[in-house]
Length: 283
Image (cartoon, rainbow, N blue to C red; front, side, top):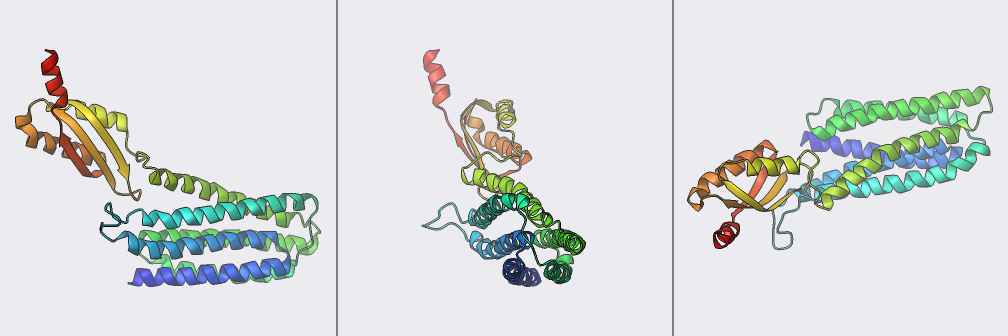
């Protein structure tokens, strides 16, 4: 319950401040502030959707979703990554021309907003700092990362007080947008592959197949499928031909033990005699 409360506080802080950033980014004519607003709104959506869809993903399979609701935990990540990618690309397209024709920005407003942002992010990091959940530890790092980003905004605002290097504002926006894309695109692709039933990255299917065939009880493999529904739990469907059907239980036990070494916790095994019978007919 404490973890959920911390997550809600983090969500409200991120979402509220993202809206404030957007409004003041437009008011101050600062592309860097708008870029960080996109970043924070994406993080707020990630936190909110993760909390909402995580509960749905815990439901067991039913007549509508016989395989369960695990993939709902990925849906929020895919949607958030998509929003971040689109928003960041739009900012990149908008700010490249501004590098060559920079516009005047309200550097005093940027400075004040930067100081306020650091205070809020520091407070938020303190809220989740002592949490024990994985999400809380990730959020703590995110807030510290945001503090570094706002220090850069403050530095630019200070430089603009003494110079007319207004190109620094769109340049910082491009840096932030590029950073977001470097994080969002790999995450989007990773989750998309899970939706497409890609073999889990940490499972070497060829090695797994060789290890199965190396078992004394196995004659051949007729089907082998490995997938994950949420990036955490791994499933496998295996059809094999045992050398002796009398040893079926020993065969299944050996296969399940081997699957666990590959992190596969859910294994469906089907023993098939078709290849053996075919070989007998050939003989």
